[in-house]
Length: 564
Image (cartoon, rainbow, N blue to C red; front, side, top):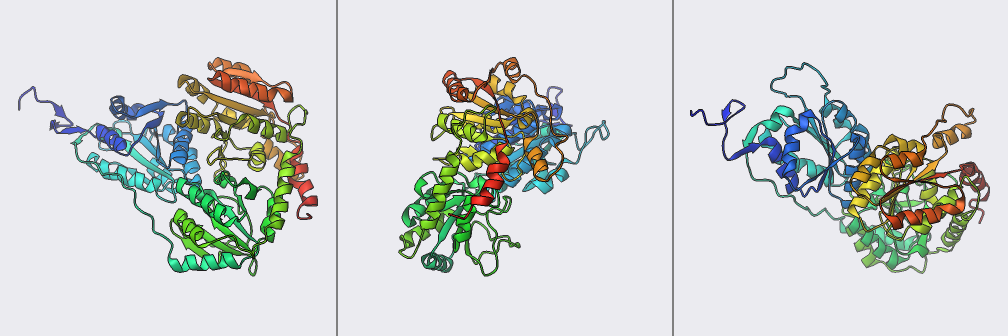
């Protein structure tokens, strides 16, 4: 052997071989990956070097959790798995919340983490956690790569599982020595788009007969219906049958047309107006039911009939046991139903329309109230006023999420991004960042409580560095307001849930964003308009008064509901 022949890992380097990390990047490119979000570490250096010359754009974030939320939101909005990167140990453990967020919320996402060498290591157990075992309960797939030549099949399988129904999170661990080893530059597996099975004709016939025979049918739109083809099919179904509809929180905005048939958002409080319509219904057609959300209604034996329309069979529990299941491609099922149905003379929607009028009247209450700190009703109305039909709001988790889910009316799908599955705090800002990267010509606003905002506020620097056009509205009450409200409702002393905040204007300015503070209710709309007009990253602080929570969401409804 010539002294000039290169050696790699004790073997002669072959011109037809490449690093395993190069092969992984090629496999990701083959899957159409556009971005990788993350915080690399020492164990990712070969992978990072492979990314350097690839078509994939690395988005360096300030925390792994923000990277995970961005990847999950990419999956939510595109249907393609978003990819995020972290190192071993603490980097990987910081992905746990984002993994659960994607898994429960049915958002396709891939996590890639590093690890110490697995063939030989001189560092003992330093920083080593069994990340694969940690990820298995909160992902659809978790695997350590122990042979670089398996990378093409592992990547294809991970993407397949992440993106097929029900979508979710997957995880690949690439140890440092495996990333550096030489492997064959081999053919990659072509991504496929398999056709989903269709519901059988007998079940469609039964559903058509049940819908025709019902007197008070209602359509429920759940989280699993928020897919492009399903949206089109549902709108065609509603347009053809004229059956009124309502939605869960994560099904909000799926149907953008036919506002005259929209009843409202369910599962916000047990006695809300929408539940009056549900109680009156004798048939609920349930599109995309997902058990991660609170039940929008409770079934009783001998009560209303339910048709379950989903990719998979219903998970039977004490309050959900549908009499008929249309299992298969949801879009296809509704297309076939629409072909067979016309408006039925026996359907009676008068009561539903009265409920709808009450819902709209209630939503309109106090929307111009000058009180300061601002009331939630005024804030929701003012945000709606500045957001065009295609504008997107990304909500963090807190009491204000209930107000927006209830009062914010939508005209297009995926214009309200909220989480009613894991219901985690800290996701609002990263979700909005990802959204404005995908839709740079649309208005995008992150709406956060002061508690949730501070959990990932460091990503303001990422937003500024990326040159994003983004408005962040912080609703300030100097406490964990949702828990404080629950504490009050439970009759417990007001204790342990208040905190201090930084000067948000100076805080934003220190990152290179522009900070604003609202001093009166009438200032919010012009401030938001100027932020969007000027472009760049803006942070707007608005004090909020949650004293309306109990009166509107509990007491008043209990007195007035279902009496119309």
